[in-house]
Each structure stands twice: as structure tokens, then as C-alpha cells.
Amino acid sequence: MSGGRWLRGLRPRLIFVFGALALVTAAGTATAAYVTARNVILNTTQVALALQVRETLDRLAPTLDYPLTERSVRAVMTALDPPSSDDGVLLRLGDHVVTNLGERVITNDDRMTGGLPTGLRRAVAADGRLAWQRFEWYGTPYLAVGTALSPPGGDAPALEVFVVADLNAEQEALASIARVAVLIVIGALVLAVLLAVLSAGRVLRPVRELGRAARRMADGDLEVRLRPQGDDELAELAKTFNTTAATLDRTLRSARRFAADVSHELRTPLATMMAVAEVLEDESDRLEGDVAEASRTVGGETRNLARLVEDLMEISRFDAGVAKLSPSDLDLATAIQACLRLRGWEDTVGADLAPGVVATVDPRRFDVIVANLAGNALRHGAPPVTIVLRREPGHAVITVTDHGPGLPSGMDERIFERFVKGDAARTRHEDRDGGSGLGLALAWENAHLHGGTLTAGRAPDGGALFTLRLPL
Image 1 (tube, rainbow, N blue to C red):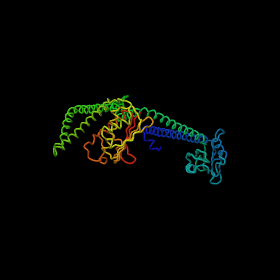
Image 2: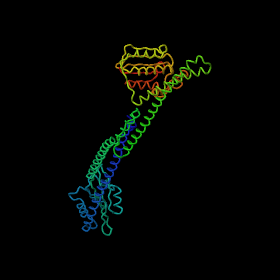
Image 3: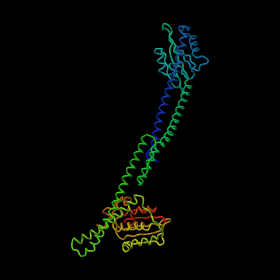
Image 4: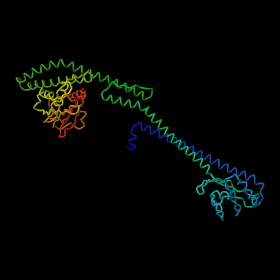
């Protein structure tokens, strides 16, 4: 998984931010502490050595012979290099050099102090001031302090004094501090990640609950509610979600109740209109011109309106949750043949029905599913239209195919939504009996009421393919 995809989720991003913040903070703090400790240790060492050299020379100065003799030089060497000291000492009086640095210092000609820093030697030779400098020699860190002991009057040459201290102990102390700093950074990072994981889980739990509730709402469960916890922004979001869900639930219930009431109220005048329309159609053969055509048109449109009202009432039953099954054991092949025969489709719809497929279904609702699928294929597809029944383990599978242009692009899922119709590319001709757009929605609702599924797609040889799977 690439880094970009890993950081796509909110949880890993929170952990990453927490960890990065802890790493930067701990690393910065540890670095600042290390630099401060290093400066304190090294400054303390060099100040202490410089004071030691200055105090020793100030104490010896009144007791020395001037001009300085070899005895005086040896006295300075002994004072600066007591038996308990590990410091190295180099004294230079003109061309005469006394040192205990051994091979670390080249002692011939002008290179006799070659192991000491050039800048330090020049500073001491120029004005005799007290100076110090850190340097490395053969990989070992040292601190060198240099000064000059000038005789009274300034006529005799000055004694250049250099004391070299090994900084290995300080270097080891700094290494220990560095190791502790690294451990602190690692510990802080681990602790921050653990806290981030715990905090992210606590913070994102309401977000996950909100996501699950939103998905349930999208699936039609408008009674889902959240339990706000606390008084923070997430609790406010949960309260807002509950308010929105309640408002949407009331609105949809009102709309569904309105549709059901309207559909119910339309049944009585529709019954009267149907009776009048049938009379007009019966008399249309004796009428002439536009009057005959109008009477037939009224009859057809009245039947369409009656079917729409019945479909709306059935949809309202599903919306209200009162649609129930009246199941019985049914031979599906026989039921499909009866559906086609009742509607006069035996000659227009081919049937390949496996015998002996018996399922526990509601006969009326099963007839609605088959009639809507076959009627949709006849209205919007092209012949031949075929219904195939076969048995699969635990299921009966019914497919309805036609040889028309197939479903429009992107309509595989939307085709089962209410009042959704295929576009003109799928319509063979203008038809007054073109359907209400509720037939496939009712078929889908009835299939799911049986615990089955209804899907749409494209047939291998063109046309639309609807597949119904019902548990036996």
C-alpha cells in the first residue's frame, strides 16, 4: 500500500500527525538539551583549566629566577604537571623546549609544537594573552590552554606555556547524554503513537457511528438515531443528525400518507370514470371521426390512470411497512404460464421453464413480479422476449430477456427507482400503455419482501436482462 493511500483514512492521519508532532518536539527538545549540556561541560572544563594555569603561574612568578634559567623552567613544569595530573605540558623558552607530550609533538626547528593548534600558538606568541582551543590529534579530542610568562622589564624572552587536557571523559559523558536523548525521543514517539491510537479510537467512534447511521438512513431506515455523548462538537453533530432524520422521517411519512390518501380518494371517481369509459368504448364503433377516436382514447387513459392509482396504493403499503406475504407452496412454471395466459402473452413471450421448481411464495405478489418484468420487456424491448426458469442450490432463478437496445448507460441500478423510465433509445414506439414507471419498482419491492433479489443488466447477445432470485 502506497503512503498516499495509507494516509487516506482519518485515523492513520491523526496517528501520523500525533507521531510527527511528538517526534519534532522531542527531537528539538533533546537536541537543545544536548547542545546546552555540551556547551556547559566543555566551557566548565576549559574555564577550570585556564584558571588552574593562571593561578599556578601567578603563584610561581615571584619565586622564579630572571632571566629564566633551566631550574626555573623545570619548576614551572613540576607545578603544572604534578604526579596526579594527566595533563600534558609544553614549555618553550626561545629555542629550548621542555615537554612531556612525547611523540604527540614534533620538537625540531619551527615545528617543535606542531601538534598544537596553529591559531593558539600564534595568539600566545603575539601578545602572551591567555587563550584556549579545542582540537583533535590522532582522533582524540583535546583542550589546549596557552599563555606566556614574561620576565619583569620585558628584556628577556618570554616563557610560552601550553597545557593540553584529554577530553575523552567529557566526550564519553556527552555520548551518554546523546544516547539518553535518543532513548527519550524514541520513548516519546512510542508514547505519542499509543496515545494517538487511543485518542483516535475515542474521537472517531462517534464519527463511525454517524457513518453507520447515515448508511442506514440511505437504505431507507429513517428511524435510526444517535446517542449524543458530552457537550463537544461531535455531540452537536449527533444532535443535528437526529433532528435532520426526524424531520426527514416526518416529511416522508406525510408525503407517503398524502399519496396513499389521494390514491384512496381517487378510487371512487375512477370507478365511475371506468364505467363511463367502457360505455364510450362500446359505442365507439357507432360513432364517427374524432368522436370515436376520443372515446377510445378516454378508455385507454382511464385504464392507465386506474393502474397508476393501484400501483401508488401498493407502493404506499411498502412505504408504511404494512405489505405482508401470504405464502404458499407454488409450482413456479405453472404460475408463470398462468400469468402469460391471463394477459394474452402466450404467443409473444417465449418460455423455457424447468418443471418441478416449487417455492414458498405469495402467488399474487409473484404474479406481479413476472407480469411487470414481461410487460416491461414487451413495451421497451424488442422480440423475441424470453422467460427462463431454472433451479439452483437453494434458489429459483428466473431471467427475462429481450433483444432491444438494452438499458441506457448507468441505468442498471436506477431502473428500479420509482418513476424512472428508460430513455428514447429503449422505446420501440409511442405507446399509450407505456407504463407508470412504478412497475419495476414494485417488482423490486416484492422480490425483496420474499427475501430474494432482482438485478438488471445487459444480455450476452444484446437487449436487457433482468434476473430474479428467490429462495426455495
